Length: 450
Image (cartoon, rainbow, N blue to C red):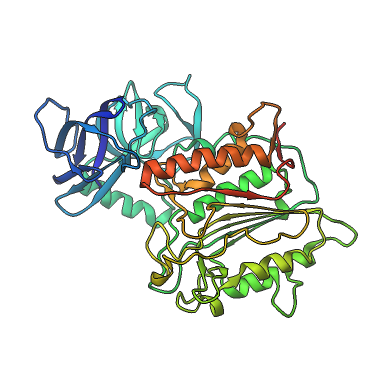
């Protein structure tokens, strides 16, 4: 197991943040930090539960703009955990207890220890979950959420036993640990678009050893598919998800220089002009000589993006050939040569590459991008298990961006919401700039909620 970080108390009086907490582990805690500051082991009484070591910490710190508000812990075996501190969120109270549980009957994980709290995820029979605490007959799950004791069977409580049991169980069923993430559940319904087509591309695992993974790409794509179906109203049969797309996949779907009529073109029923929605999550990169932007397929070579990537210019041009009443492109990527997982093209970082949605867009096109300029990095939101921009895009689609409360979210409302929330959180989590951008007719209604 990895260290379990628990915040017992926190208080923020600008510019001071007071934190009191404890880190639990089955072997022993080596070091705990908040940002770059070491949190020393202090002396106050804590309940260790069934953990071997408990590391209490307590400190008041001066918070500066852009400071990394994350507690990180390492145990003696080198395993690491991190917990971003969100000042506005309440502290979770529980008695420490580590256990691996098997769901015995389908139930819901709830936001608090009781049936009156809202459901945050569905747990199916046979699912294995990890509990890090216990309160009033409810188990507190790793990643968030509570489940009642009558719906689970404890299959391990000590680390060595737990690992053995989970290993055996995993051989006969997939282990799925649910995350209590607000945008993943209770997805709102929008009005139907019966002829619309949706394409989702999620590039996570790249073949070249120098290209870092895009950690949350598959999770982003899986939840975005639900928003395409439920909120945008695209028929499920018309939503296509491509994971780890190679260059041949891009060319098959969107065409080539010589033939713009790819699979998407041929999906359009003759005589119709459907709305088209495309979401891409993965790496983007520049051609360091021409400063042109490229999608990075999973089989691309980072030093030859102009040859092994798929040009955004070609992408937009070929899309303009598809009969449609409108095209919306959503890009969860940056085109700086960098990423949260590391540099993709080392020498690209100082370049001023063209904007992702720059230039003249074809008529009836909308482009929504995670970054404004190519020098920015599209950040992740580890606490939510999503890319940062995608998390707030889905939250905005769910109604948070509906400024006037009329159940219609315009592109102008969405842009205002994304710029405000993503920019703030990128500075808060990583001390860096990230400015989402929306291009197109900003008066257009993006989402109509029922």
